[in-house]
Amino acid sequence: MNKDNLHIQVSLTTNPYEIVIGKSSLECIGDELSKIGFKKGLKILVVSNKEVSDHYSECIIKSLKKSNYIPKLLILKAGEEQKNQSSIDLIHNAAYEARLERGSLMIALGGGVIGDMTGFAAATWLRGIHVVQIPTTLLAMVDASIGGKTGINHSKGKNLIGAFHQPKLVLIDPKTLSTLPTREFNAGMAEIIKYGVISDLELFELLEREDNISDLSRIKEKLLLEVIKRSTTSKAEIVVKDEKESGVRAFLNYGHTFGHVIENLCGYGKWLHGEAVAMGMIAVGQLAVQRGLWREIDAKRQKKLIEKAGLPTKWPGLELDSVLESLQGDKKVKNGKVSFVMPLKIGDVKLFNNISNKEIHECLQKLS
Image (cartoon, rainbow, N blue to C red):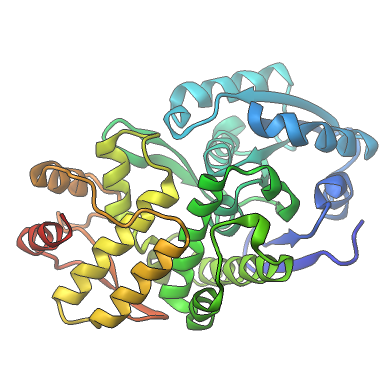
């Protein structure tokens, strides 16, 4: 067990858990499970995809067996387009074959797609069994693995089917980023920039000062650990304040409302989630400038930082009527009104639900 691991508490009233961050922490998964009370002989289903499994499943399985657990590995196809009921059926079938019981455990080894699907499968198998998240992408590390949001996509919208199901543990090994494609790494930076805009001016300015934030091989290890720590801490603090998204947790959707429209209308898989969020942040920033909520200079700072992260900033050519229809299908719509998280300044945002179609039209015209 690595004593240098960083432990961040997600101090929920019910189902509290830890985020453990540390190099080579994958090798300690068996020890970490024992530490939080999982008994020997426990049946565990590890869910991953081939790209991740080829690198890391052997290490995970070895550690679990060493701690006298009984693991079984399930390999799913990779990609956002796989985030559907068919994949959940495959996980449930594997759970049945592995004879998972109420006290059993699923482990999600992979990015946000694997994490969301495994979490949802765990939430719905035997009316809810335990899940542990081991994120291997930057985006999953700082966002998707924390907070208990699980789910799959519907043909009419992203994440429309799901459940809140908190993990028992989130284990982050930054070493897994070394095998992450550059495009995937950059997509994760979108969520880190998001944290800067919504609540952490210091993080935003730290990223601004860096010459490079898009090439992992040139990013100092100390900086990488710092941005992961700050982002996961921000997410944990917001989740503790508002577990079921009835208040401030909605701020985490900054850039996501427009981003989900892009993913839905362009087809899942064309844009990575973080890329869509980056374009969504540009769009909602423009909306805030139009309303006089945000200074143009701050919108330009945001765009410059997103560009520096190697992310797209240009709104894709989408029909206005299709955009408006997609927005109405968003799971955050209340009484027919779409909610947007908009920036007031870097480090401060507010939720608005009185945005007109005319304003959206004007915003997208300026971005086209």
